[in-house]
Image (cartoon, rainbow, N blue to C red; front, side, top):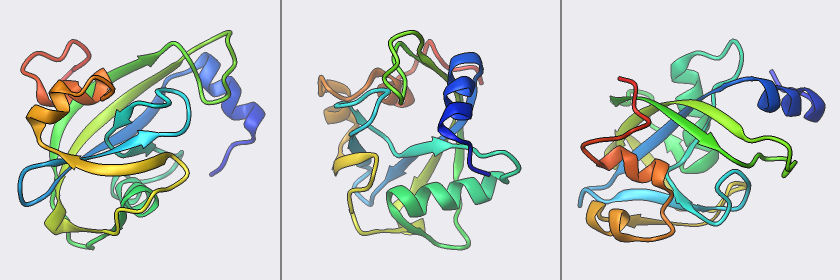
Length: 159
């Protein structure tokens, strides 16, 4: 189900968006990140992810997000649930200065063996790369919400 821009704007303004972030690791234990084109978090490096749509199953959402942002997911993928994360931004996709965006995000970890990535850029990212966890944590323009997936104490984690 797709919302009109007006309905989506009202949802962002008045509600909480359910989302999935994908922590994709390669054989060297490096993590896939992309440099965001859109608000919120424009210009920051972030793990791939996206909203869960109304009436969409969890596995269908993962497949759709993988296809849109990183390539094709194998049908028998395995994943690890990392927790529920609270992501609050001061800005929003529409760049309206009057309100921010609030996501309740499910952190999901996948191994590159379970996906086929063509390292393409998409409507969300200018470029993609793999970084070691140490590099990711040290890089200034990796967004803090991405860094929280790799820290012992994540103030935005619920589970």
